[in-house]
Amino acid sequence: MRNDFSALFLALADKTRLRILNLLAHCEISVHTLTEILGESQPKISRHLAFLRKAELVKTRREGKWIYYKMAEIKNEHLKNILNNLIEWISSDETMQKDYSKLLELQPDLVLRAKSNIYANPYMTREQKKEELEIHLL
Image (cartoon, rainbow, N blue to C red; front, side):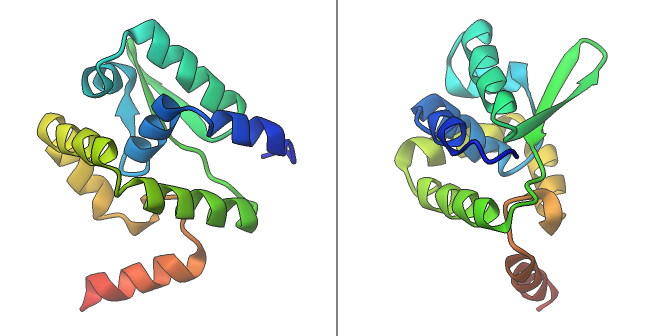
């Protein structure tokens, strides 16, 4: 990510975009699934995703007619820490928890597959990944 901090914080200054990031912190998700979970129209979700993509927080993958989004890899350690702490903080919000429950209902295999890969969250620091790995090995 470029050092455009205002673009970053503008991207984070919207509840829908935070809800999207909260979900993408768990796994790669299609636009269609995001619209189902968030209860918003496809054009609205796509606009929010474009905003996040412009801020270099998410990236896309096309598979046939479907577009999938996932968290972008962040190289700046300070930014990784900010985003990881943000995701951890907002995940306790009731709305965020409901969104995650819907994701589990709609795509349990996808979430479980992503959870088995501790490196799925690019915002985790190396130390956090190591701690998570140690927990999984116990």
